[in-house]
Length: 259
Image 1 (cartoon, rainbow, N blue to C red):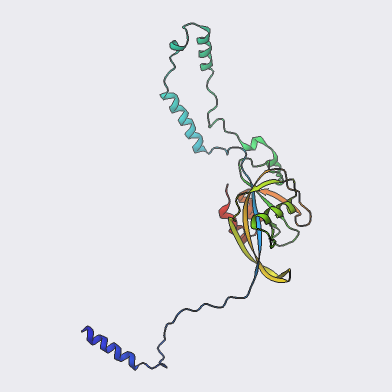
Image 2 (image 1 turned 45 degrees about the vertical axis):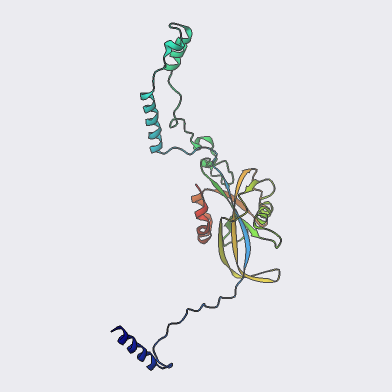
């Protein structure tokens, strides 16, 4: 049966002419890529780490109170007769200290960042002494109407590496007073976008840009805008970045942001 079916199939294939209308599935071809060029840029996601511990959630407060209560209930009493002579002044002082109560627990001693500084209430977004329990990110404003707010970024020279270009752009746009350091020499995110009109750089017309973002930590000083490339700046929380940055720009870097 199998041999008969195979012979029938061979006879059928021989009768098919090359001009037959039966479709023949071939290899997929790759469409020619559109001729375009993107210039390489580097950006810096500069952040100020939290300064104080965040306020405990209701669940965390309840947990620490329960932990303290359980520790007191299971703790063994100190054998005062072994350490203090009965009726001595040292024994009396020890018992007085015990009746005064313990110090604040982890839940009661939690520091509220809103009580540390009033800068956050005043809305001074240029000060990084606000939202002390949150991470703040530096965004700068370019002198233009569209896509004005972004991270510090700029072009990379032909003889520069990415981290070298990032350091140079930080000093050119933010001044020498801001103290920072870059985390590693490799980018953590990238964003590709097109220009509204081709831009001519060193005799080359670029249709868009590829921005590679480096991570950086700020630990002192303050931003001093040069007034040319940068006209304004702000220290913004993670949630606030979505209001300042272009949606596509924000989506490219949101996954590397921390609270």
